[in-house]
Length: 296
Image (tube, rainbow, N blue to C red):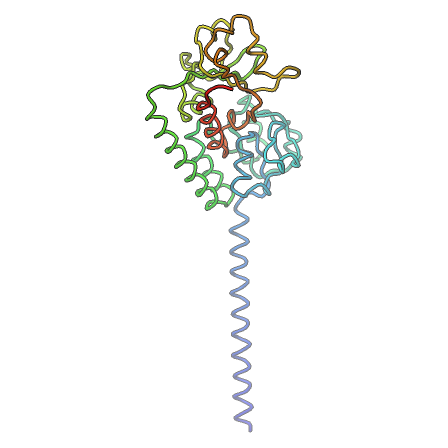
């Protein structure tokens, strides 16, 4: 009996030791996971609508605690407090948000970046002005937020989509000239170095603004008439009369190919055409369909 008691006691001790080791191992694993999670910022402020869209697209929207007034998509983003305007935050409001990371594409003033650094807040500029720069931007955000898998998957899908559109566009021998009117008072359009020019090229068209070595620029009605575009797309909402009707009724525009063939279009969600974000393929596909129309 004493021997059996000793064996029972030893067995019990071994079981307790095993349970203790298991518990310790579990705590270590949980601690490791907690450490892994804590190395990523939990309070992010985005100063660019394109980056805000990307955060939500890779599953990092719940880490966003501040946005700009221009960050309006997806709908959930509108619930996040506004820190300021696009590229121009209110530093007082920014400080109150207590972010551990601020991301932007292009600040309105270089001094803002220096002031953010002086506040001891991590600041990451992320270049994203062309369709080709969207996948790298997504991957960088994935690394910063801990959503690497989701970001890589989306980036790869966009790269494949862009390659497909480019291949189709390169096969076209005749490309419609496109005048993309970004604003109507005064008239503004995209030049050779604009995001909209790249979108038009991927869609199989030719941006008439490519003759100007600028990003965006003001034009005169006479300049548009001389370019004689095949397609006109109005990227704004007219308050009273539909934008396309206003364009068609402009003095001297009735003989342009786009107006004569009734290929003037409006009523767009202009963000998918003007914003370098995760919906870029949707924007190109929409433009492509527009160029393939044969008039109203």
